[in-house]
Amino acid sequence: MATKKITGKMAIGECVSKYPETVEVFLKHGLHCVGCAVAAFENIEQGACAHGIDAKKLVEDLNKAVEKKK
Image 1 (cartoon, rainbow, N blue to C red):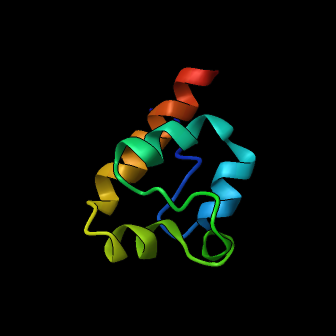
Image 2: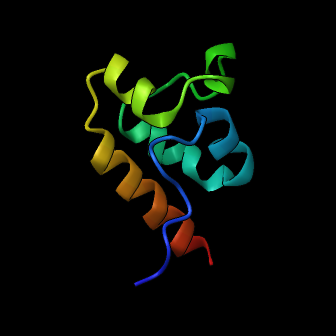
């Protein structure tokens, strides 16, 4: 299995910056703050929790998007 590139502790802004293909995944999960100022400081787990989103599933889908892009 491929090494996970994205973890729940990664800042949302960092994730989107490194992997632009993840924007669609964030939006699909209902996390629409990918471009807001808080995204630079808030990590994926914090953002998911604040919006009632399953962080584990979100991280899994983000990594799938990155793998698919390869």
